[in-house]
Length: 119
Image (cartoon, rainbow, N blue to C red; front, top):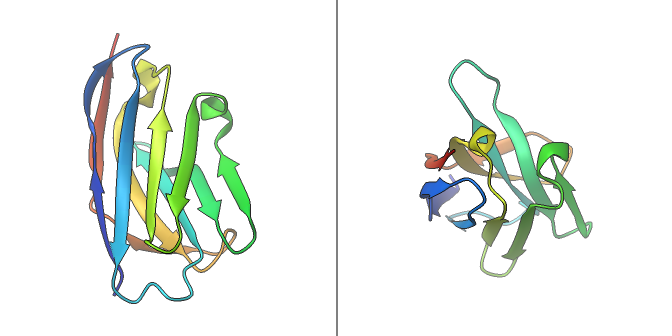
């Protein structure tokens, strides 16, 4: 079972920046993609950003393009999500997850970390 640990969330004001990180451990071989999802009460969990090292591609939700940047180290199985120009609507619980490749289901999940953006 892949184990994921997120860190770096918190409370910030609109317009501020925040970085969240995730480290995966355990049997990560074959998991070439990692991503960040977010969820607010009553809404579906949505994929915010993802990176697929094997195919050299990244994905961003339209509403975060130009503000968020995903990066990582495939050898260390870590990813970072740099979030700039944060908006109150970015407030959510953010989850890190892994997949064998982008387009396939994300099968391993972290416990989630709260990001709150005040107006």
